[in-house]
Length: 465
Image 1 (tube, rainbow, N blue to C red):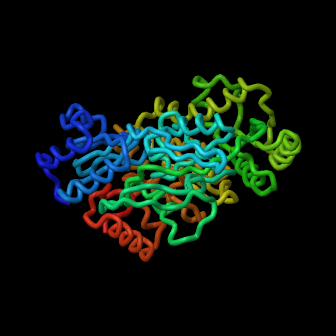
Image 2: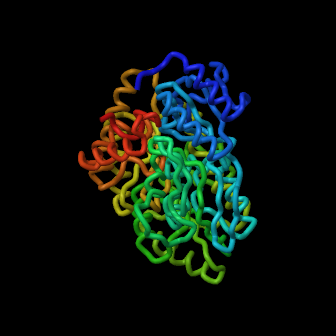
Image 3: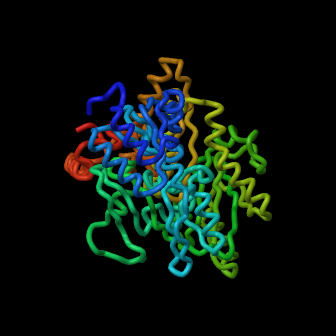
């Protein structure tokens, strides 16, 4: 799509009529902050518009089609893959002011919300009625529901309760062609037509702009137990993950932290962390109080192997909060140590986690790159962090070669190149390794069907045709 130095005056005039002059930014200094996301990538948009309703979004997308203006949709910019960086300038559509919860329906276990509502606001509102929405990314206090859906972002609870695709009944959206649509149902069963809801979730704003979502709620568990399990080495912890997931009691969280990550977060945590641990698992189980003792026993039995050093249950709300604060401190702590680290979230079948962790250790030594690993082990979703100095050309070269080998290892283990962070710009040029030519062509065709003028998030998610 040809890029324009300035947006047409008539286009801006109509935008202003649709949303009001106060909801349109055109000055470079005002637009600057809307050109980045948490990937640290940046490109300056020519204008930023704030919508407050589905109807306004509909008008905006139709107008962008009329003038062939590139359109990038964003929530709060917490994504890490550059998917909301406006590569071609154009217009950034911010949904942060679409922040209304439209309907709470406890009887039917659902909530309807605009795309700009934060995950935390959904949890608080659902909690008032005895429910929760399972997806719980680390950035829940700030990230929006629209962003969660665009990336299919999950979090620790996905191991038991699934991802946004599993917990969303329906959507309202506007296609790239400027056509309003409603996908899905208000019921937990429904097989009429193709499943456009699951197609749009995870599409990273390349097919349509999600404006509203009907979210499936889950009753809050009556009880929960949290455990800290320490192993002398990574291999023992990795094997324990596979053994825990092979027994009948499914944890509601199963988090993995390697020794390098533990060393880095001691100064950021109030939790009691072992000094000589090779790896640590954080495990939670939930359900009726009457079943909790048996659930903990089952987990303890499965967690036993020759490398087990300790198995402790958190005994107070303070201890539980400290453990979770430790887990959530990992990404910020790593960014302070290595501000321009390479962070990848790969996923493999749970039984292959030991091979993945061992392989990553080999690659770290082979390329002389420090690698720190943690993540949602119950899903096989490991966050692989390459701690590098971007000002060192030799180290950057080694890091890119190492990353190439990391992806090859993941695919060899029947895994996927992203578990929840998405593709965006960062992994776009690697996904042809995972997807065959026929699948990629079908995806390109679907994209053109939704967005024939190619205005939405072009050059993201899929390789260039």
